[in-house]
Length: 265
Ligand code: ADP
Ligand code: MG
Image 1 (spheres, rainbow, N blue to C red):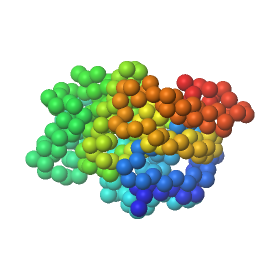
Image 2 (cartoon, protein in one colour):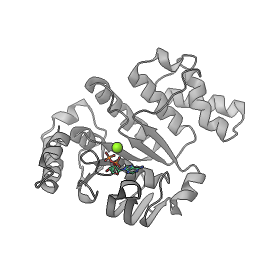
Image 3 (tube, rainbow, N blue to C red):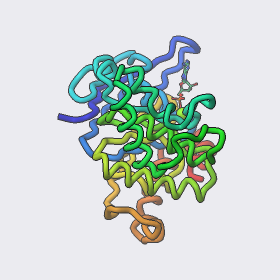
Image 4 (tube, rainbow, N blue to C red):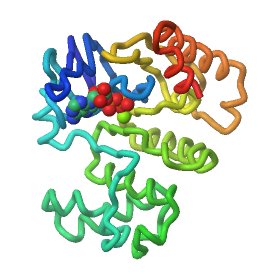
């Protein structure tokens, strides 16, 4: 059974009559790390939101863990992290991470235990009593990841989580995220517009074309695990980056050339 199974998905927003996604077929298996990449406005966030049942498909079907997306949502089958994932400044780090557990009605002792486990996972032990504003951007993002993983979702959906961070922090968090992915054995769907980030992180990169968003191609990333700082220096890394870049260019060779050049960094 696939973790995510999308078939014949089309999404049209009535507002503005925009077809954001058209004819999307995609299967994601347990334990995969799949990135969605494409130029701004190609429907990456919309695709993630449809998987998460935050917006309904216009046509086609989406199932998560073999269930319709709304059922998976009700069952808390996934956690989500966004670029602007909001931490509550008046709550401590521990209380931010505990929030979904409170909403699920977990008792205090179990919450405390789980929060400590999560803070350890993202290497923020000892920061539970701090407030978000006392932490760096990278640390805040790790709190958001800890919170998303607190109720052990099998699927983690991430929308440009590191987009606002500087390059060095981002590369460090990339390695930490892979470590978390390995330890939790979860499945990740990760939206980015950075080609190198997509290749570095993923087992597969799904390249999307501009509006209406379609899948232009899928690149299998056969770089060995675990990925390390030297992964980015391997010849195979550059080959894969080039493969993704060419797919992005190819689909936009007509009027979208300039937009795609931007996405190609
Ligand atoms: P991306 O994440 O790849 O930048 P989005 O999924 O955010 O792209 O958007 C895809 C297209 O759908 C864009 O043209 C955007 O303007 C449109 N769109 C996204 N959300 C809405 C909405 N809620 N209502 C109307 N149009 C939307
Ligand atoms: Mg987006």
